Length: 62
Image (cartoon, rainbow, N blue to C red; front, side):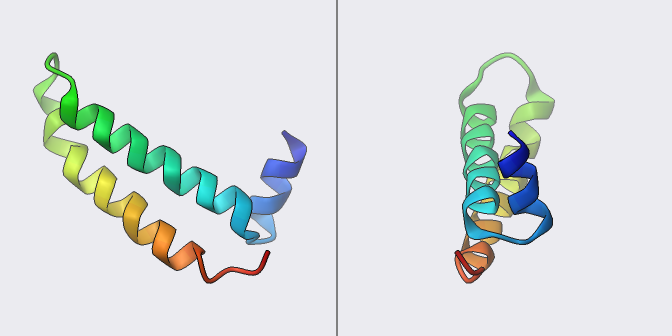
């Protein structure tokens, strides 16, 4: 767990890609759930943020 936070602080690709992937997965989950309209309303922005973040992070050093 410490390695994950160390990677975030030093802008390493692995930790940031994992965070972006979690955002994308959360956005897709928010899109598919049938219970809360507010989650559905924010799902596109969360998925878009994760996708843009993944594109930017893919240029970080290993």
